Image: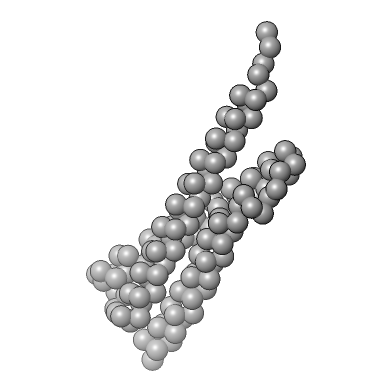
Length: 125
């Protein structure tokens, strides 16, 4: 019985393309949620820390989703880098968008942190 090596490579390529697409969707969603969270923090201010706040209902799940998306995307990018290096393909051109989305999400998390810190310092005084 002969195994077709091309079909195995095509299946693994399809799986990695699907995982890349999922990582891109997750990072885009988390970036949008972080932008909404930053805007909510700026608009509602200290009301976000209330238990019954509508803004807090959006903000804190968005932070959890963003942390999950960053970890998931890092795992996918590292796995994809190893896979492409093993196959001796060009790496940068295949994961350029994912790295840019990862950097954008990281920057938005940093901005969220500093805005949140500013709101906490001014709200509790």
